[in-house]
Image (cartoon, rainbow, N blue to C red; front, side, top):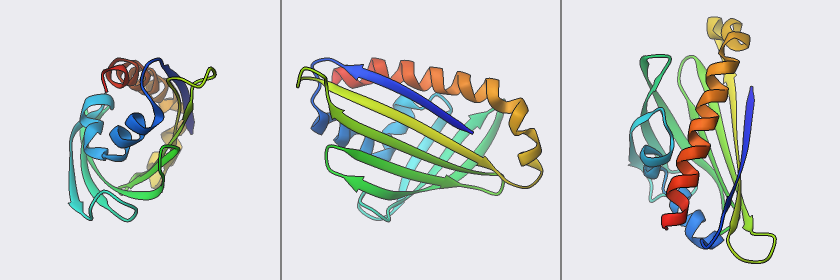
Length: 145
């Protein structure tokens, strides 16, 4: 299941947005389900691994995220996995239409595994709300960079 949101950030340049999103520990500020994200391996570059504790549907879950692609000032791709889900967050960054500010396209792809796969259609509403909440948080946090 895929959720996509587009956020326009006036007054914040793509380099600042990229630096903020590249540091996945900042997900504590903008991902509404995240309780804690800790860098456990690497320097924040491609191949770095993070331990993420989140709450979804009232239950705490843990995922291991890895930075799978970084393109300075343009792209951040993170892949998280646990026994029930694979989550891929793709954050595409570009200058605003008038050459100032930033446009962020945030895409979250969830692939459920095992029995959780059967619940996918029933999770659409909750995942949509999660996307809405992440959009609101990014809209709040990014202009402050």
